Amino acid sequence: MPVNYLQIQGQIQEKCQQARQNQAVYRERLEQAAALLTRYAADLDFLRQRVEDAQRADVSLRCAVPLNERLDTAVSPPNLAQLPLLLAADGSQINPNRHDSVEFAVINTGIFRILPAADLTPGEEAETQLYLLEDINNPAAPLTEEVVALRRDLNERRLLADRAGRETTRPVITLTDGPLELYREPRENQLFQQLFGEYLSVLQKTSQQEAVSAGYVDKPGSDLVIRLLELAADSRLDVKETTRRRPLGGVLDRVIFAGLLAPGQRSAVFVIQSSMAERFAAFDPALQPCFFYLNVGIHPERAWMARVEITRGVAEKPALLEALHAVLLQQCRQMGSKPYPYALHRAHEIALITRLEKEQIETMIARAMRAMGLEVGDKSAKQYHKDNL
Amino acid sequence: MTTTSPLQIGRLLRSTTSGCVIGCRASELNLPVFGGMVRIPLADGTQIYGLIHNIQIDDDGLIRQLITSDNVPPDVLLDNRNNRNVPVEIGVIFIGYAENGSISHLLPPRPPLSLDEIFTCTAQEVISFTGSGRFGYLRHILRAEDLPQAELLAAHIRQAGMFHRAQGDPGWVQSITRELVTLLRDDYDRLMSVLSAVGDVNLP
Image 1: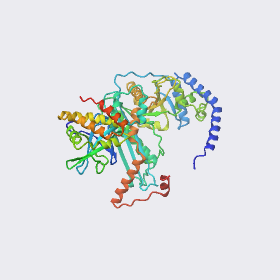
Image 2: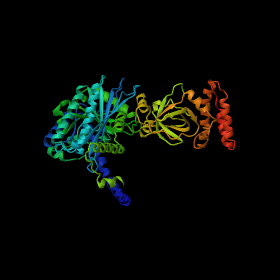
Image 3: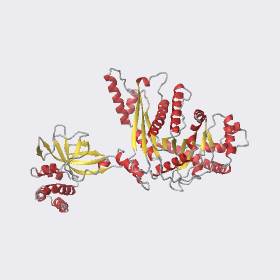
Image 4: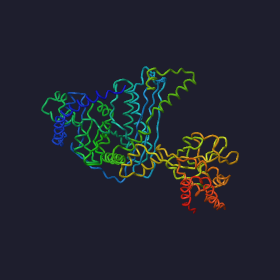
């Protein structure tokens, strides 16, 4: 039975109509946000104080805090004689599925090493980890999809720290797709604590090796700076009241910065205020997650924004920040009309596990289990029929 | 390219009784040439001979995206040539085989298997194969109407003719041309097309 296009058509019309009516409100909020950014651009101490007060009233507050640059800072692309070595990692996973004949998980991590613009063939490698039988059925630490995702993130960072340690040149930029800050749930169980601790240790190791840890967020949907501006705008209100209000709701940071940053320019660096970011800082103040926006587009009239997450240790070293800024632009510009770091795309290509590969792994496992006299189950009837659709 | 020692140019992707497709890395693409003779050794000692009739370089999403970039730096070029799994496919038409040292211009008894190695033919192998019998292998080329027959024959005659002349047999080119005239005498259009292409062959 196909999708009911008639119903979809009606719903599209209705929702577009609604959005059009809200457009005026959105535009007004956008203008307000831009004006607030200009108004409070230099009031860094006031903004920091405002966040501190709000955070005391609401511990779950998540927003940006200025580090040491004006809010409307626009830093032009650095002109470096030599671009730094770049190591990019991306992970792909097969989650355990009880409907399969054998329940297993795989994490495949692709590493791509490139010395940008040099006449050298880049390096690529993949590391694959299988989780099977006892790994899956451990009641004390069940291998849920969340845990697999957390292990994948940890593996990416662990491999990058390891490979960065082997390099003799400095600086080395290590890059992953997505934020450095972790959002994995549940956050309070023992396994999460253990893996999170390992993650922080790996970030610390990378930092101690004078390598940059950076996370690249393409088309970011965050409103951390907008939230900061809301706190600033409501300065006459009690902070408890302020944390509940979202007068600029719906406006995204990237829209504001798209109007501010020319192609190649980066924004000011901000610190992330959140309960998770605090845990990073508690482990090591140099690991506190920070970020900046970067216009990786090439056309002045069509900005393409990315959010780049870094650690505070990197944010406070201008030479490392410049190296990262330069190499990200160089990488994005290689991808022509769709700017995205070439190295990250290649790491993703290396890591990707196809459906065919999954089936082959399943066959390999079943064959080995049978050879050792272990019982292999059947695929669930539901899965069988789904596979034959 | 045909040398005095055989060079591996790739491995077999798929095959039929009349031809096969070889896969090779883009960085190794300087070895095979259009019209070049190749040899595929089978496990039982049989050697299958073929002619390269097509070299195809496929694209993918990333290549298409890189094209839109202002310039492609050397590291990206090398990455795509040496690392990425962008297939370079080489089409080969079988023209005969050798079994127990005896050359036949019939199709091979069985096709090669996936991942079998493919080598360029040495000058001596080309001379032995093309100098054996009465040019029976030409019918495989003339039967394959979807191939650029005239160009393929011209490329083959140029390559093999060079080796025969170096070996002291300058008459080989005239012999194969006469055979082509005989085989195509009832197909004037095709004959003219083939003779026109062969006429462009300038042996160095």
